[in-house]
Length: 428
Image (tube, rainbow, N blue to C red; front, side, top):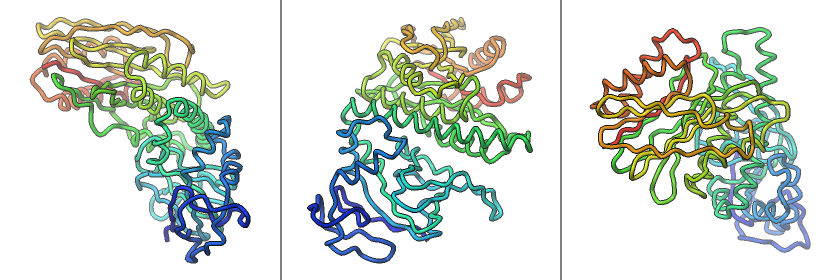
């Protein structure tokens, strides 16, 4: 049975203090279990909601004026013990905060078995990934006892991002919360690895599920170009690489290839943070200094003691060609129509390593028939073999080029490329 929810910006929540404080919003009743709440129970103040939000790690450090704006879009609901709030595989459309009671986060193991990943209690949030996109839920949330909740829908949260200052503060807060979540998953995975060594632990499964949920369904569509991206996945892979399709103001687009390096939280958490920063900063600020802005945000949100960074290649097609920028060890090259290969140089340290680093942006002219290829990892020899293969695929559709490269990589002898990301650009 799925918990019922009633909505209304500013609508009174039945479990907040009532009495002398006037009702702030609309007059629809809230549902508590199966019982409608009487009008006299619906009075509350913004301060009541802010007091709850202030206890949530997700919003740690936000000033009261930001919390008041978030409080204006919260919704309330109640669930009985055993009621399901959302199920694994469902699209994520909101995140929750427990007001009272407890919620179990569980992962299906098949054949009716499940693994309890966490228990969320009063003042704790869950379902934060729904603020990033509508990717399927990676786990099921179920009330462990009679529980009262507040929640924020993604569409309401996104409206708050019209204010760029609030958007930046919220992205930093969200990144810290997700990093903390990643630390918990990492601890669980290390414990599980004491008994298993094949990458099939529940924590590793959750990491791979998150990685897959982050992958775009299509590349940007741009006049004059064929674009494609793809991540080659493995059943027991590390879940540490992905690509991002980045819409830009004015109808343009960009693509980024990411690969996590070093020890730290589960790598898909770092991928999710980088993806969120690329999408938000691309939307609000365009492509200029995009890599530098993402680098600063990742550095600021890093877990103390973590050695985790991200290698990244960013390509931004434009009227005269593409703009190339990179961080860390990634491969990129231009294949000219006449058959020459121009490798694109590395331009700085991995993302998250040095805040304030000024990454160079290199304008690369491209004429009709010229192609660009990016590989997130592998040796220089392997990449040059990939480039030679792509040179033979000049007339193939962009998506087929990426798929052909993936098939070739699977046959390579390099163990480091069991998972890899490929980007492809061709000028008409």
